[in-house]
Length: 475
Image (cartoon, rainbow, N blue to C red; front, side):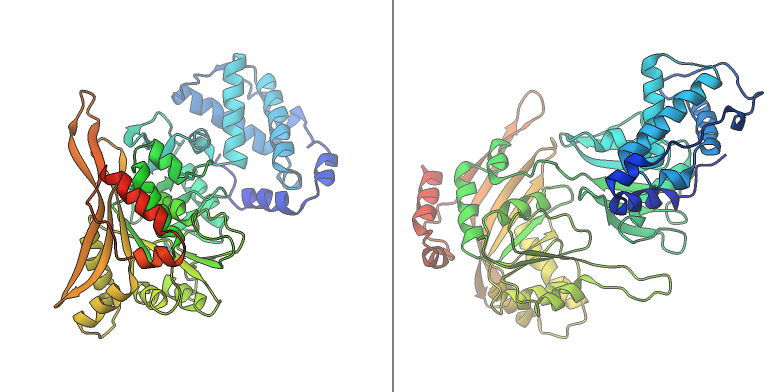
């Protein structure tokens, strides 16, 4: 028998939000009658907790018996802990009735698996609980990869079949009002903790549903953490602090998995608590700690193909919301034009990220996005707009040993003819690698004593801090 349709778990989740604790606590236990379990279906079974075929066969028998026994409607009236306790009690009774041969550890393993299947995200739960995992990549039901310490590795986690994986995908996207099926086979979503999720399913994914989760750290990283991880030098971190606090317009660039969003979060820590900040994201994952933050998120079209809200819609609308800073989670299309317009019309201190392999390429990509957005503007006009809007580009990279480094702090100076002129303030130089294959390198100042944003730092009373950081970096 297949698992229940995924309409039930969202009902459980909804009940958690609206059902009073007292009501859940007072809910009677689901009726348990051994006659619901066929008397002739009581084989003696053993289970391998390493999730062999025998394990899955045993789990399926117990899971099906649980569905025949439990009152799912009543389960939906309980909070998550009470529901888990109810499932635990019934599964223990089923194991006893069916005479399944299990050790205490094996029984606990099986119980937790079944609870995760009904109330959580199934086999993904143990991976989601680990804070050392940066990414979870599910390539069909049989292959689950994780990234730890910058390295990708195959796990022994697997789903029973593609149907179970599809159910988990549906459960995830339905929580944020989205859907994924054959008519809408690609979906971006997020988990309740803020982890970013991408799902692509057949017919586009040939080997079965493919699920990618960019894990959300429970402990928000700070600039001090980046220094401890050697992602940036202490002097470079002080310069970034001045850049963030003095309301310069910042573009964070980097490749996939280079830490752009983490870096953007760290930079937002220097925003004054009194400023009104509006964020625009495809899947909300920024973790701003300021008290006056408005978070906006795009919306895909509905079943009729209507109701879509794009990133450009959000950026254009937030201009009417009296923002002091606008932060775009990722610039990837024609919204680049609107963000540059906002940066150039009084919304100093705005920030955004984009994919690029260098600061120079980041500027070229901005130009390309505006051109492909259908804006009939001369190339020189677009470049003048970029120069008048972007003050600093902070570039992050993921090196071949898996480490992440801020490799450039680059400011945009102006135009010489039709060419945008930039200058590097900080660079990361690679000198080699050690016996373990770890990259050896050093952050250094390029010797620029008075960067272009010096006057802005002085306006905010930060020129002394900037001068000390630049002097310390040269010594």
